[in-house]
Amino acid sequence: MNPIVETSGLCKRYNESVSALSNVDFCIERGEFAAIVGRSGSGKSTLMNIIGCLDSPTSGTVRINSCDIDYANPASLVKIRRTVIGFVFQQFNLIPNLTARENIEYPLLFNYHPPAERLERVDYLLAQVGLMNRGDHYPQELSGGEQQRIAIARALVNKPLLVLADEPTGNLDSGTGESILGLIKDLNRTQGTTFVIVTHDSDLASHADRTISISDGMVV
Ligand SMILES: Nc1ncnc2c1ncn2[C@@H]1O[C@H](COP(=O)(O)OP(=O)(O)OP(=O)(O)O)[C@@H](O)[C@H]1O
Image (cartoon, rainbow, N blue to C red):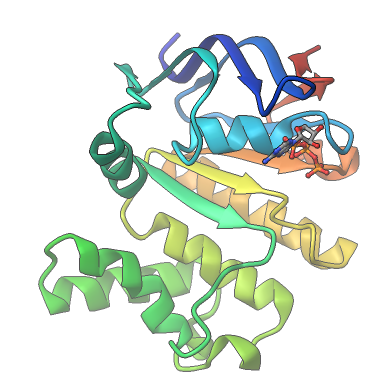
């Protein structure tokens, strides 16, 4: 057992009447491809936001890569988000006035990388997601599935240990959604990157090694 994420007694209350997570204990192993499933409002996004260091729990602890997360220290959260975690969103969130290639390269600009190294990394990832011939296209010139492939390449550019994807297929038709999950599965197998995805769709979740079900803020 070599977990990349461990939570213990995780609780999140948004206010007195809304308890979004209650006492969540779970772990994600290194190299795993896990799917979090649950009905709308069950607490999936809340859990992903806390693991992704985008939001803080009301109580409980989270360990990522064997370090306790200090939610009171914003600089340490930024560092973890930049170096350990990659994010993929339902809405793709590509920057519209940058080409596909520039979108993938963008996170590298925050850490020092020589230009030749950046080019090589971007070319490698464009090939990995099967879009070598689309690098100079702007997001609006790409299909939804192609935009999500570029967003996945961008999430991988800093070689994160963990990629969190919140409804990565939510904006795609079912065939394209399957091909995106096939890509994630392939990257997980070939590169060993840990993926945690949230999906409403239990058929799509069956691509994952393990399904974690959330109901009313609890792992069931
Ligand atoms: N900022 C907020 N303020 C108050 N309540 C919130 C806030 N964000 C989420 N909630 C509530 O917390 C609960 C869990 O929400 P969450 O977004 O985590 O669910 P979800 O499983 O991701 O839902 P969906 O599948 O619809 O995206 C819901 O009852 C929601 O209304």
